Image (tube, rainbow, N blue to C red; front, top):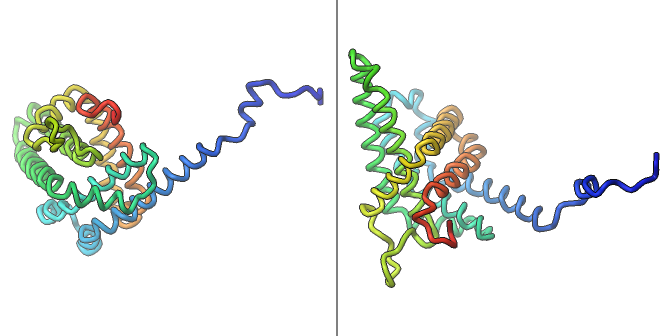
Length: 244
């Protein structure tokens, strides 16, 4: 033992973290657990059906319709993530506020996306049995990724505390039809992030299908947060400067 004090670099590593750091960590953990529980409550009909049906993929039209319950729940979860960035930990109130305010628009976006993906998957199934499979399958895969990424981008805008871009002094949210084209442009511009988001969402769906209740109660919030944060980065040009 030389008795010399530790070097400044070692001293900084041994120094306890600030109180604010612990508060942020606990707030993030609490928000994640609470969002998981609220998602489970909001998606209870889907969870019950998944628990009762042995082959969900074989009954995919029924589950495509039932998946509509996920749209307002996703808006509520995204609203909680946005509030967490501003320091708010009122998860239950924030979730249901985002759920209630974004339900109608999120349902419309989700329904259009589910219909488009269903048509694309059916067409891809037919094409897969023909000689055109090598040429057309990449098109169908790309189209599905773009549709999913655009739906998530629109719900992310709907879930913003300011309810997305406004049109003039009245601060009324822009109509969904006016948001589709810029969202699609930004998604295509950052196509690699859209592909990564689709992989993460696919992982979340796989976990929920394999273990519905544990998947929603444990895995959903971290995966959805990663998707939300990436999507907000993609949509930065459409967000107010203070929110981007």
